[in-house]
Length: 72
Image: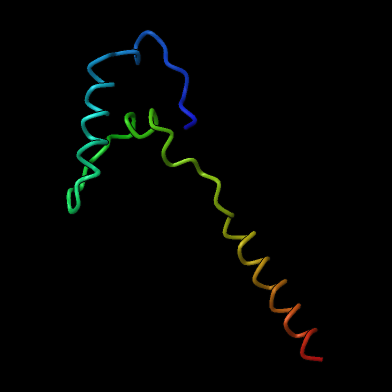
């Protein structure tokens, strides 16, 4: 898991313990563990690597053109 660097402010054993407890709770079926943005970042969650809207639309147009070429 890729975690952000830990400095003196974020190297807090209480925070680490809280995160560990929440991760254990999250494994319980039906339980919805909530993580604040700082905790989620510590866990490496929400790394944005999705396509932009423009890239997604461009790939759809390309795919449509390929399908039309195959039909000819």
